[in-house]
Image (cartoon, rainbow, N blue to C red; front, top):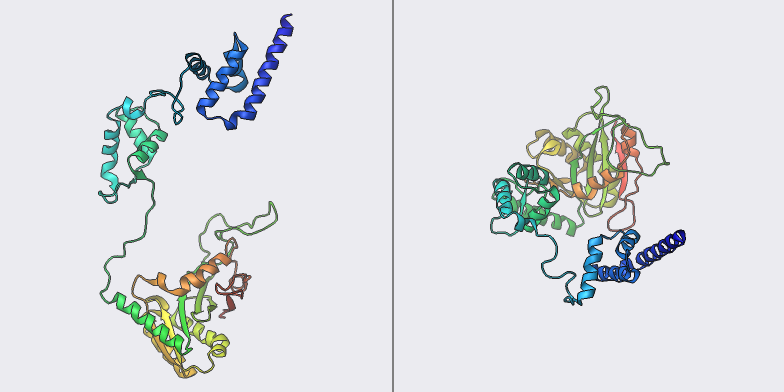
Length: 376
């Protein structure tokens, strides 16, 4: 008889568990509490324990639901518990917690003091340790919540400070804009030139991923120390602003003015003169430093030789110091090259120059690059 009773009780527990699993996603806190209490009451003696075993819900929660049902308590529709229910917040239990926390982060606080949103460079873990050291019992998670309530947020550094600016900086940009429009109106070529960062050649890790057979990743060196016996790859690019096409030459030794002008020469002979067959002028947009710098005498000398050789009148406009990010080749061509090399070790100059050109013209469906060439 006792065995029969146990079987009946276990069957009821299984039924409650099955019903709870089917309906639990529909319950809010109050409905769940009252439903569990109703099931416990229907079982009579030992009902609270059986419902607890079937659902895993706390016995105290079930007892609270039974109390509400027996007393006929009616809560506001917007509330899940009666007023005053739940444990008190840390702010109430520890009145000096907020003031001590603010004192810890105030010397490190950044941002506009008039702005309600501030941020701190101290971590929640360090703040928790310091609060515990002075007698407050608080967890790292609670510190995060307190900081959020106080108007703080996690933020990284933001590059906005550019230092002193030359008073003629804006006029230089306006001048470059006018010259570009003048050349484009008469279908004269406007090119943006620059050198990409040097690339170490060899089995070095390149950020990114590419599709390969499962379990067969490309093996690369553990460290990125450059090999003294291996040369570097020096990409120098020419970007045609109007045609949205480009040329890249890959050097083997140094980024010099001769190398830069030679790249422009090869772009013109291979691409430029076919597009601008009737032109007599060329506008070059370049950074103010490096192999094409505004004070580089060899750059000017080599450009003069190029102008005499090609019979072109060449105009050069240099970007003001610290504004190389505005050079179109940076974000129109070099960024795409980096994406094209993503996840692929640059083992030699041929890999750099002959990597698959799957990039697309941003204004159409044609290949972004017309040609890449390696200078011997």
